[in-house]
Amino acid sequence: MSKSATSHFKRLPKGQNGGIELLLIHNVEHLGRQGDLVEVKAGYALNYLLPQGLATIATDHHKRMVEKHREKLRAIELEKLKSYREQADELAKQSITIEANANDEGHLYGSVGPHEIVDALKASGITLAQDQIRLEGPLKELGLYTVKIHLHSEVDASLKVWVVPTVAAEGGEPGAS
Image 1 (cartoon, rainbow, N blue to C red):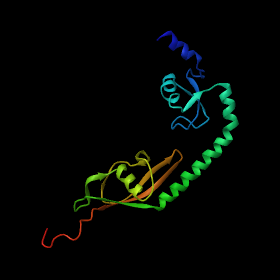
Image 2: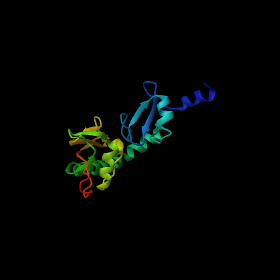
Image 3: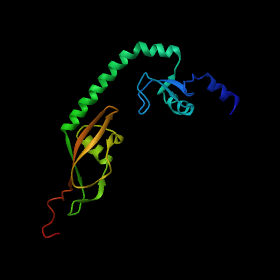
Image 4: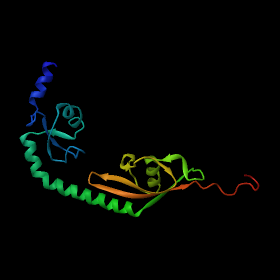
């Protein structure tokens, strides 16, 4: 390790367990919430949290600033949470229908995954990301499924998804099979 790299590590505040103390600027799943003081390994801090702007070095000044704004941040977070819960309630009332090619026993020739669910939701005016759709596996049969949608670390919604057979085009030539 070069001399400049070792001196860089010395300036970072060390935690009780030898890691680097950081203040989270944004919520980081599986680590902490905005404003939390966390201790992480140097590589995680220097290669991910700091460059992505998710955290900052935990100086005394930053700690005081966080304490001053903690109530304001809580109010904002509660508003977001309320919005996500309202969206979850709206999604619970909805159901979407996805047409898919299937055989006579109801087995799909392909499968229905998050991409198809997101497209069907987009057609009904709801925009979600594919990674918010939580499936245990692709849907491979016709029927009604309850799909879990991850809106926030504290809010999950359920959506009813109907997978129905594709309707053949009507009005074909008589006698054609």
